[in-house]
Image (cartoon, rainbow, N blue to C red):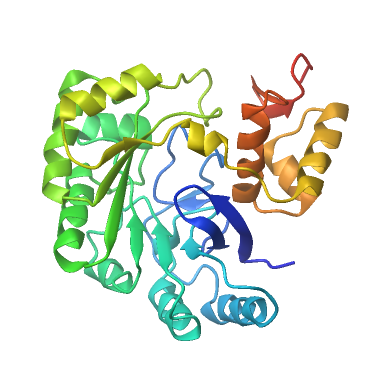
Length: 314
């Protein structure tokens, strides 16, 4: 069992992806109201070697000595990977170890105003930053950023990264009704997206409960109206797509363990991760499949979000 690697996780966008976790739970520059991993416990802009590069390298060497190559290696996990000051060193190591495997970076993009951060990612094949708001008011409402993190700097960093980076940028925009779906904010988002010029814009919305109670997802019709109104190339809806829901998990024993556990008592995401020994990102994939099959349901409680069999009680 690895401490900093997880998966490979089946992904519609990246195939079988080996995850690399570079930040402890949950060190991030944002505390987004919709985050399915949970509330940020350390809200910061301070970059340091939260997880040592030599430990990650050792696990990568061990993994590739005994396992087949995945389709992708992806920096993601509990927190914001660019907060780890060693991300560039580890990315270079991966490219030397397995030059033929593409590397993706899932990031909120908030640190791209720092040229050192932008430079550290130049060898990545795909960078998937997020942008949910342009106005400072909406940015603070939906993303709850660290002190001194301004929307304007965040956006300029994304624009600057596009001018320096030759790989693919897949920009994710998370639409949350009542937060960032006003006509004015959507118009501002369109203007900024044009300036960033990503290769793809991916609209997403709430799939399971976030960190704030009673959030509601945008409907497919609402997302489609945004696509039609923006009238931009390469905009796609990835939220709750049929292809995403058909993405089958690859270990029936894990599905069985989840079902056996929650049939006895409702569990949180952390409960299931601790019981199975899997990373929460992996557990989320199984929850997607089980939810689509109507085998489980999520129930919001004051103590958090619990997963149970339909009709059960948390």
